[in-house]
Length: 193
Image 1 (cartoon, rainbow, N blue to C red):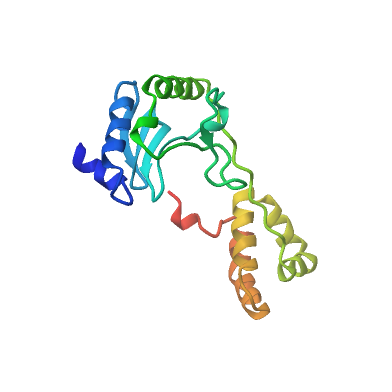
Image 2: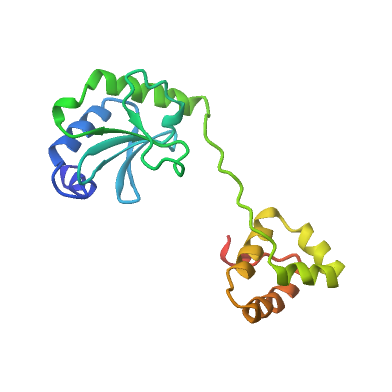
C-alpha cells in the first residue's frame, strides 16, 4: 500500500505524514478506495474522508464536513463560496496530528453519513436565449413540447443554444434541436444509459 500512497502526495514531500494519517484511518470501519487520483475512504459506499499532500500542507478532508461540530476549530473551507460541504483539516507537520481528535472527527463523520445528511446541489438554471424565446412566440406547440421536457433536458437545450456566440449559430442549433424537442427527446439522451 505504501507505493500507492506516493500517488496521493502531489508534491512529493508528505509521504511519511500521509502514511501516518492513513494508518490512523485504517483503525476505523472505513473502506479505502482511490477516486480522482487521491485516497478516499468510504462508509457504505459513501465518501467520508480523503487525504492529500499539497505544496504548503497535507490534509484530511471530510466530504460532509459542514455538518461536523468542529469543536477543535480545525476545519477550513478550501474554496469559500464554491465548496458547500467539504471541509479540510490541514497540517504542516506530523507533530500536529492528534490521533484521538482525528478519530473522533472521523467517527462523527461516519455518524453524519448514517444520518443521511448531505448538502443538496442547487439546480442549474440557464436564461432563455433570445432566438429560442422568439421561436416559442412563433410556435406554441414547440413551446409546449419544450415545457413538457424534464428540467435537465430543458437545461441541456438552453445551455446548448446559449453557448453559441453568434446569432446565426444559435439559429442553426435551434433548427437542429426543434425536431428533437417536438419528439420529447433530450439533447444528450444518446449518451445516457
